[in-house]
Length: 210
Length: 382
Image 1 (cartoon, rainbow over the protein chains, first blue to last red):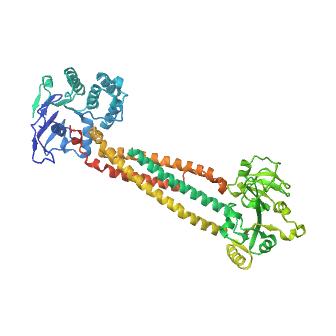
Image 2 (cartoon, helix red, strand yellow; image 1 turned 90 degrees about the horizontal axis):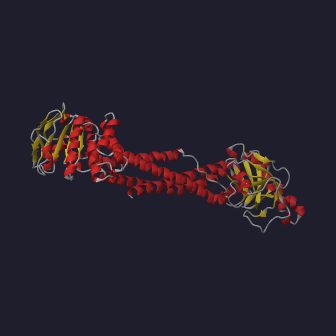
Image 3 (cartoon, rainbow over the protein chains, first blue to last red; image 1 turned 120 degrees about the vertical axis):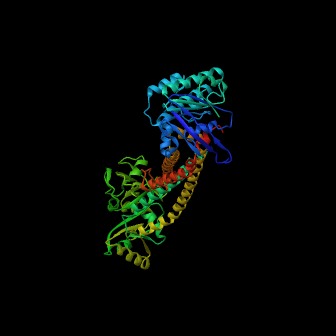
C-alpha cells in the first residue's frame, strides 16, 4: 500500500519553481506507471516517495508508516528494509563482484539473509554464471538485470523503477517488464515505474500522468 | 597515485623516527652498560673523552702510557675499592689484545664458555665475537701485530700467543677483545726496550680503571690527580653523558625531520581521502539508499584511512629495522658494536598512537561532506 497526500517540493537552488504532485493511492500489490515528459519531476516524485528527498509539504504513507515523520535513523532503517529502487543509471560498488554487491544490499537491509532467495533470483535473472565477476566485467544486459536484483533482493514493500527500459530494445524491454512484475508478485509489493517509454504503457492498468 | 604517495611519505617518516629512536636507545644502553663497571679511569694527560673511549669502550686510540708505579701509588688511596690496570697496543687481525688482571672479565660478568681462563703468560681468552669471527680453536697459537689496526708488517713473530678459552657473549666490549695478562704485553714489547736491567722500573700500563667506596671519592681524587700529577682522571659516566648530549642534538634534528614528514604524510592522507570521498560519492549515496547510516559511511572512510596508515606504519617499521641491521653490518668493524633489530618498544607504540590519532582526524575532516551528502542529487540522472 502506498499513498501520497498533496506532495510539494522546491529545489533549493531554483526557489521559484515548485513541483505540485497529484495524490497517489495504490492498494495492496497494485502496480502503477508514472508517465510524463522530461523535466516534469518524475524522478523528484520517486525520490520523495522513496524517502531520499524531504517534501516541502505533504506526506508519503507506505503501509502504515508515515515516511516523512520518521527520524533520521528510522528513515535509514525503513529505506533499507522496505524500499527497493532500480535506478536509471547503473550505480554499483565498482570494486566488488556481482554477488558481493547483492550481499551488501541484503546486509544493510538488516533483514535475515535468505540464501535460497538469492540463488533463485540469480537463476531467474540468468546471473548465476557471472556471479563472481566484478561489476565492470559484466555486459550491459547483465548490469541491467543486476540493477533489478539489487532493487528486489530484500523483498521490499515498494519497488520503484526509474526508466528501467529506456536503453533496451523491444525484446529486452518486454523481458524486463515481465521480470519486474513477476518479482513484485513474489515479494508481494507495489511496483511503481516512472517512464516516458510508450512501449510499457500496455502492461499496466494504472497510469498516473504528471 | 595519491594514495601511494601518502603511504610512501608515512613509511619514510616512520622509518626515520624508529631508526633514530632505536639507534639512540641502543647506543645509550650500550655506552651506559659498558661504562658502568668503573667509576674512574686514570691515564695519560689528554682529552678525557678520548681516554674513556679508548680505555673503556676500546674505540679510540689511547692518550699514551703511564708508569705502573705511579698508578700503583694512586691506587693505595683508601677511598679506592678496587683498581684494575689495563694495557693495550697490539692487535690480532684488528681485534685488540688487552692485558689486564682477572677481575676485568669478572667486572663485565663474562663467564667462560669453553676451555680455560688465562693463567700463564701468553695465554689468552677470546671474547665471543672475536672467537666467532676468527677461525681459531682452543690450543691454537697466533702472532700479534703492533698497533691497533690490522697490519702484517710489525708482527711480534717471536712471541706467539696461545688461545686457551672462549668467553660467553655478554653484549659488552669484552665480546670484541682478546684478553691476556699484563706481563704478556710487557714481554711482547721487551725487544724494544734494549736496556733490560732498567726494565722493572719502567713498567708501563695504558690506563688504570678504578672503583670507589663512595662517589665523593671519585670527585676528590680526580681533582687532586688532575692538579698534582702528570696523569689525568676521567669519570666515564660524566664523559659518556657529555658524548650523548652531543649526539642528542643530531638525533633531535633527525627526529624533527621525521615529525615534519609525518605531518606532510597526514596531510597527504587527508587529501587522498577527500579525493576518494568525492570520487565515490555515487557509491556512498547508493549505500545510503540501501539503508546505511551516515555513521556507517564514516566508518568506511575511516577504515580505508586506517588501512593506509597501518600499511605505512608497518612498512616503515620493518624498513627501519632492516636499516638498523644494514647499519650494524656496515659499522660494527668501526665501533665494535652490533645494533639489533629488537621488538617494538613503548616509544614506537606511542608513534603508532599518534599516527592513528592523525588518521582519525584526517578521516573526520575528509568525510565532513558526507554529513551533507545529497543522496537524491547524486543518484539522479545528472
